[in-house]
Length: 218
Image (cartoon, rainbow, N blue to C red; front, side, top):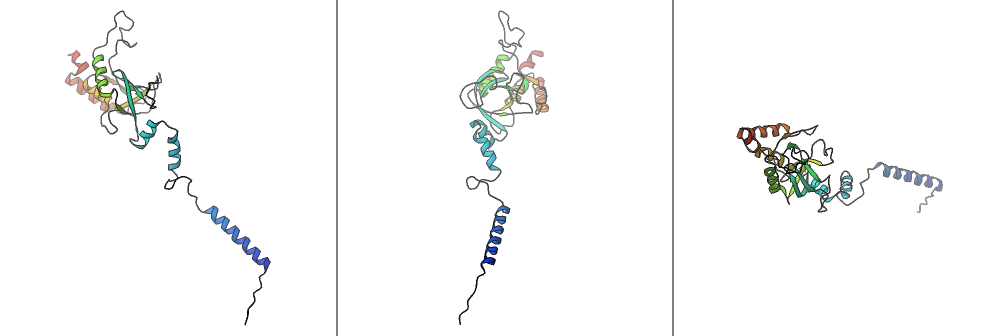
């Protein structure tokens, strides 16, 4: 016995249309995976895109030390200012790549306008200005240091403001070590006050021990 089935073309068309609409709706409803190499998460795409156009030093800081920016010290100006290669081009671009150490003030060299003898026939370094400059040169010149920023990153002269660390995970900054040696005094301005309590305690210890600057006030 043979069975014959008649196909109603009208109902077949309707059925196919319904299936097509349902498939389209399902495709729109399902979440799409972000475009990009396999294994990238949705949040990783904008981060990578942001780093793609950033200097190598910025990308390295974000991926390794996180909140500290590595840079190579090209020169030391005095006990609280150094020149750091922030964009990796091997040259010093003033004033942005002049790094002013936060939270401290070292004695002025003879060429500083803040020095009382500036402009005189024989300008002199303030007491312990040379020692502070030599100490910082020995610790940082020609080396890679790590900059940690506070609330404000630049001063009115457009210099970079930072706490400078010898390594990415160092506990004590070079700023604080200058205070420890008695080669600087505490100076916090505005909102940049992250280490104020620690710095003031370190200065007090140097004063009690009569180190550096404090030896002259016996």
